[in-house]
Length: 171
Image 1 (cartoon, rainbow, N blue to C red):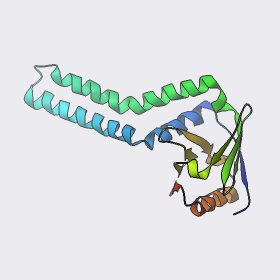
Image 2 (cartoon, rainbow, N blue to C red):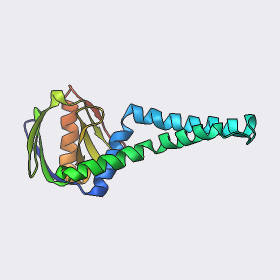
Image 3 (cartoon, rainbow, N blue to C red):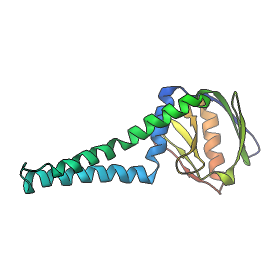
């Protein structure tokens, strides 16, 4: 594929928050923290009701820790959005040029070039294309920035590039 797919984007705080939550959902540690939180709450409630019979506050520690772990993703998302928003780069108008060799990225205050062999994976979600450079850092491209033809061309490009993992969204 020799053509270049050009996409213009600009995130607002709501889109950035959704995207950060999607990035965190893809992280294995965050998934395990959520599951551990549920297990802690259930186990602590069983201890509280059947073993201690409401005579001890020991299971409350498990309930508190479990609740914290369940809300851990939302806390991480909140603080990440606050940090990214303070830098203002997250809200710039950005142009992405996707080719078979690289991604050229041009913002209002920066330019960057990413080669596909340096990309960990690309994930398509309901609302975003997430281009991961590592497990927690990703370029966020809203799917609304693509027209239908561009989105199909992008999916075809991802299937042609064999060095990356591409997770396509299924309706």
